[in-house]
Amino acid sequence: MSGTLWLVATPIGNLGDLQPRAIEVLAAVELVCCEDTRRTGLLLHHSGVKAKRMAVCNEHTEHDLIDRVLGVLGSGGDVAVVSDAGTPGVSDPGERLVRAAIDASCNVSSVPGPSAAVMAVTISGLDTSRFVFEGFLPRKGRERATRLAELACEPRTSVLYEAPHRALRTLSDLCEACGPNRDIVVTRELTKMHETVVRGTLGSIDIGEPRGEYVFVLAGVPIDNTPATDQDVQRLLDEAIADGMSKRDAATAVAQQTGRSRRDVYQLTI
Ligand code: SAM
Image (tube, rainbow, N blue to C red):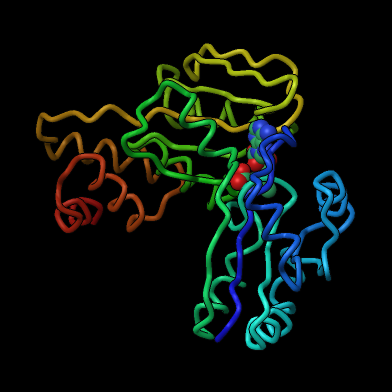
């Protein structure tokens, strides 16, 4: 019988959000994998827990930790993964350990809890029936241009993470890609003393001097039910390609936006 790999969510600001079951699991497991032993040590101390053993799990060490974690699980012990804040595996380490545990036929479970993305989208007031998690946008180059062009065509609500020093630049790039009329909700410092939610359009939103951690919730492009003509499709393709997308990516995005078949749309690019 293998042990269980537990993904344990921790607070994104307010320590009162640590679940009682998270405390139980962190106290019981043989090994706690965390991004920063000092930070997680403080959280454990706050909860009156002393971890049996801790290991650093970040983007550089997660892969090297796999054998050790599988060793503990294989001998029947449980392992917890926590990140600095929120849910592990959501723009945080965790995914590779989960994959490895599944491949080794070990149990994987979670103590669910805070995640900035879920909190932001649910308080945004935008459509929550379908939404896409975008995480952090690529910082520059063609990858960023492609992602922005995809967002311009995305009919579902999109959730993006952003650091304060890049917040204004990203808002301005989103405005350029999606147009000034698209609704956006900018949330900041969720669950903390300075929690702020600013609602507006990309062309008018004013978030002041950026400070703290941000989640942007971007409305989807309204779905137009009138069938797109070849001229409409050609115009959207030209725009997407001018924004840096490859013909293939542009065809996929425009097909999704217009409801036309990808094959028909791709024909129009050649
Ligand atoms: N795993 C975390 C989760 O489940 O939300 C996300 C980790 S990711 C490395 C950190 C980013 O999440 C921040 O740059 C910010 O965009 C967002 N974030 C985390 N905590 C937040 C908070 N209290 N308020 C607003 N955004 C937050």
